[in-house]
Image (cartoon, rainbow, N blue to C red; front, top):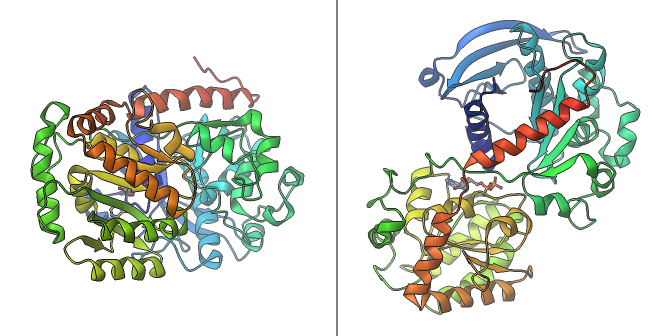
Length: 469
Ligand code: ADP
């Protein structure tokens, strides 16, 4: 399953760590949405998770992703239908607390004692908290260190106090580092309890320590800033490879960039756009969420279409944004094409055929879209925030790979689009920008080496005698 970028990370980072020689195992909820027959999971254990209402039965199933063992945790709070997220904390609180605790108990059941548990986002805060509290007097987990990664700070899993208490995770003094409203948030448990904290870009690591970017956690994160590091995500360069991608009409690489034109034509055809070779085809592939900047994009895109540009949008989410985009398509038939669903093959065709990818995010912890776009020779036009600032070099600087803008307003975005058009009007210059983007190294190898160093650092905070050589 994949809802957003964390799905990519969970698929790629463990493999990259395994390549470095580590024994890595991935634990995810055993959702009904998983294609169970395709993965043939085998049941490896049954155990119970303590709960105020009686012990809850849990099961751990094993399958593989490449060489990495993947544990699927099932039990009453984990949905067996096609849902991932539910309607709110009433459903998602128990679901992810259960998952967090079941993942730890599964380790015990399988006699796999991890040196480090790497937990991701609010869903897994309870696992970190368990390790940092009762785990310290638990012979099995006493020496297990934790690293907690913030992928998206504003999602906090708030108001989970009642459920945390039911699962035996009452608040302790450690939580005084948190603002009062966050002491029953699942994210807070991770932020307060982890041996090492990371987030997914150096710029975002700075932004979240400020009042504007901290969403109320700036004080907590500043207090723990010696434990907080920014490590960029990578992309799986085998999965995202324009020279082998079956979804494309013409495969290409930096040396055969000319072939890309056929993909643009194919995209225009599939999207129902006029087959105009020289018109700038701008695209967005995005969750439709207020984070992603649609409020500033819509007015600018209106002007873009009025002045002759083309637009392809792929995304799903907020119904109000869906309606606004559908309206744009109706008003500009043949110039704007909007597809409101999750469609990975179509996303590939967009990356391989569009001229520019617009990413006007309000904030962006890392962002994968811009890296995938560059790998496919599509030029990112993006707001200078978070990981976008760390991965894109503006065309006005040496080695430019994209167009960056600062202000969060339609005028700044429109100005960036105008700058893109100016470069696009010089085909040789544009091709150089595309080539430089394609030459960037966004592979996981570099990030995996950084995580490896941070796992070692986390182990220093544990008393046990663990060989880290
Ligand atoms: P976030 O995790 O905030 O959604 P990222 O840029 O980190 O943003 O990751 C988004 C990922 O999801 C990218 O791989 C992108 O191609 C993909 N994606 C987003 N929306 C869609 C969609 N509607 N169809 C297919 N892929 C999508």
